Image 1: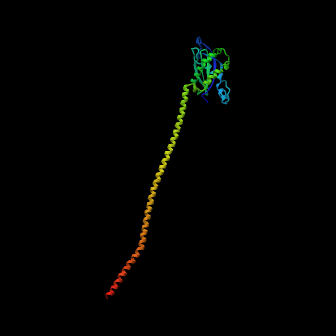
Image 2: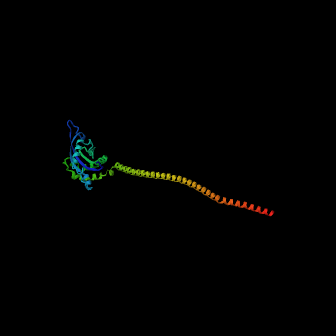
Image 3: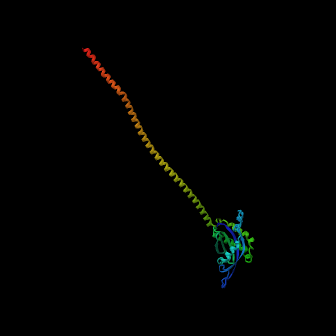
Amino acid sequence: MSDNKLRCALVYRLDGSAPSGGGDDAAGDGIALSNLSSSVTLLAKYDHAHEYEAHAGSSGGLYGDKEKNYAEAVAMVVGGDPPGGVAEEGTIGGFKVVQSDMHQVVYGADSEGLCLAVITGLKYPSRTAVQMLAELYPSYSEQFALQAKSATTNALSKKSKSLLKEHCAKYDDSSKVDKASALNTKIDEVKVQMQDNIASMLKNTEQAESLAERSNQLNEQANVFQKKSKDLRKQMRCKNIKMTAILVTLVVGILVIVLVPLIMRAKKAASGGRMLRGAVEALFLE
């Protein structure tokens, strides 16, 4: 799994030998390393990964639990594909980047064959690694250039550890030394914040849509309730009219049943009275 960690720093001496038929191409003020088959000698190494991984409680080492001679592996890479030619003395250049599945090696050299290399995770910016090597070179060359010409394998590791450690610690977090990386980090932070804001807006939109849908449902229910209320009032009005008509009919019927006999009796009584008066008057006239 790739990461953005700075893993280790290494120093090599490149002893170039002219290829067959090379003639005088290797002659001059410096060594045209890209035109030579280089013999690579490890001068110093500093396993920065071991420092912070051991401090974090892991097994430490550049490759975790697997013991691999990463210095030799990098030496094979550098020997097989040396840095480009550097004509100017006292400078480092010809930088190259070689990547594997998990790591990348960034390295460069000066005209005398002093080669500086660094191993990082694939997500570590290669331009920052180049910047580190360019900054490390003047100090390292000033202190160890003469010793580097004749030093044996790994002879300068202890002597140059503090210098390598200092630069590895400084460049451990690329965003602190690389403005572009810092800008990318800020951009990533803004992206994350914007994604969070968009997610929050979408969530609020979903809630608003849910509330709107609920409101529409309530409005529909209110309309249905209102319609049913009107229908119920109509039904109750019809029932009241029917009940009123029935009561009026009933009262009229009762009145008819009660009053008609009384009226008939009154008429009979009145007719009988007239007949009696006529009989009495007839008697008196006789």
